[in-house]
Structures are given as C-alpha cells and as structure tokens.
Image 1 (tube, protein in one colour):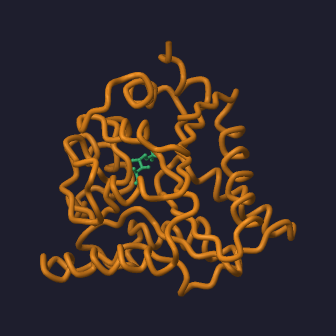
Image 2 (cartoon, rainbow, N blue to C red):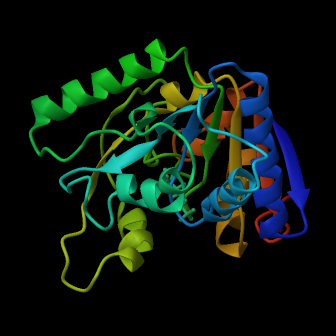
Length: 245
Ligand code: F6R
C-alpha cells in the first residue's frame, strides 16, 4: 500500500487526474473503475478541463462504476447514472455505450441477481479494470461494501448501514424515497483491478483512513482489504491523514 499525503483536496484531485491520464495514455483500450460521492467530483472537473483543452480523449475508454441505488430509475435525479452523466460523461467524448453503471432499477431479487452476474461478466469481457478509483465511507466502506462484507464478495445486493443512509441523506429532498439497498461491486471485484486509487479528503474521513492503513485486516473496516492489493495507492489531504501515526 502506497500512501501519499498532499497539502490540499485540490492536490489530491490533480494527482488522481494524472493517474487516470497515465492509464489512458498507456493502454490501447483503457478500462476505468469509477466512484460517485463528493470526493471524486474535483477529479472529474479536472478531467473535463483536460478534455476541453484537448490534452486527453476518452474515445477508447470503457468505464465501470462501483455501485447504484436499488429501486430508482437511471433518470432519477439522485441515481449514480445521473451523477456520472452530469459530472463527467456528458462533458467528455467517452462513448455512452462504453460507460457502465450497475442496472438496479428493478426491486425483483432474481432480476437484480442476474444484473449483478452480467456486470461481473461485462468487466471480464472488457479485459478487467486497469485503475479503480475509490472513495471511503466514514465507516470504512468501499463501494457499498459495508462493515462485515466478505473480502471475497462479488457484485451483489447490499443493505446500506444506518451511518451510510444518514451520510447520504443530504442528497435527497425531505420526504423523498431514499433507497436503503444498493447493487455494488464486491470487495473481491475491487481487488481484481490491476491498480486501485483511493482518494480521501477532510477531517471526517481521518478515523476510517487510520483504520484502513494502520488497523488490522478486518471485515469491520472493508477498506482494510486494500492492504492485500499489490498496487493500491491511498492519496490523502492533510486533514484525512491527520490521525496517522
Ligand atoms: C460511491 C461509493 C462510496 C463513496 C463513499 C464516500 O460510488 O462507492 O463508497 O466513495 O461513500 O463518499 P463521499 O466521497 O461522498 O464522502
């Protein structure tokens, strides 16, 4: 595990953008694993700037997002598909059919199970993920792999923990249906990526970051599984790194 501590959240975004560009410039058919949430927004802004100034093209890039809420349509304001279209896909030249976000609108268990299996198969078919971008939850989750998730887990249905539901409440209007279930890549799926880059910024993440890096391997801190990955980079601002020894 390589740990990089940078002065600010902006520097974290610049570092992550440079890593993404490196993959795009190195691979003939680059495959990116992408995350939603507040943390990677600055990364996506930077990628859009680089695209607009013609420093990069996403024409040959394929992407797979980590997760999607169950029970809301792709077109829903708070779906992760909408998030990705808004923050990245609609502003760059990636081919829409090469962008993948788990299909999770159905509430039928069988349909969701098939969707999860298809997602794993599509990742395989694309040749696997070259670089997986991750954030970290305050409870140590990666994707929506909440505490107690198996390190061997694959794409599947997960119930969001109370702390995740509370943390994501800010995105939903008062009284609006807020999903408590998600379809998420598993920890095993994430560990299969050839390289992983976890971004964490801000004081609220400091405890989870400490548990991930200095704690023991534990299903109670899903991100600690990254200790097992031979090419995992953790890039932090000073606040997120503030509790490290
Ligand atoms: C998002 C995801 C989550 C977030 C995490 C941190 O696709 O899988 O694991 O990365 O909840 O979210 P933010 O960045 O909003 O603090």
